[in-house]
Length: 269
Image (cartoon, rainbow, N blue to C red; front, side, top):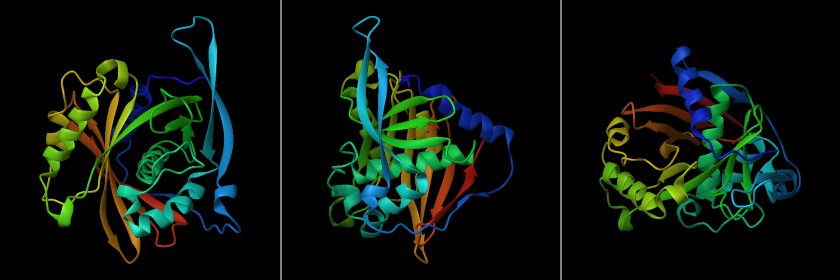
């Protein structure tokens, strides 16, 4: 299985599919599952990916990793971290899942849910890869066998719960992440911004228009909590398109028992 560093083509297909299909919200998955025993044993499968080395012509490097058996397993695994809230900002890495942080697992999981909503169930899968250049987890397209590395950055909750300028905070974190290594670091990767801060209204289209030029990352997504109602957690998942200056927005609503979820389109070209 080859690891591709070209992520933008697949993620752009999501926007193209969204533009072609103007139907309203639909149920992405409805699963009633019970997992006896230790979920850390049941939720993962060990995998090995091969990546052709850029420095050693004709050779291939193998990297071990782990993949959730299904998105349903992943939602149940992340449930306690979402309910308590604090681990999403300060939680320790999953020791048994490529050292990914809880917020990184949650954000990639929500992006996979959107991808499957716009294509087919379980097409996009969440995995962790023990690869020094693989970023903060990978999203696997099971239809094409491509894997897309992600880099994550957090807009943290301000001390004392103070409100902040969310738009400025998002753009500031993106700029810091891009400056970390420019094209050599960001090239071919998807940047995922997890917003955990409170603040006034902000406008995703304006953020898309204000992304750095040139943008070294292949794609930029923003994920943040929309609200909690009757035990159901709703997250906004946004793909920012710098060239068009707009954001495609989906909302993922997780059922109170974390056994099912729904995806709806909020803003779609």
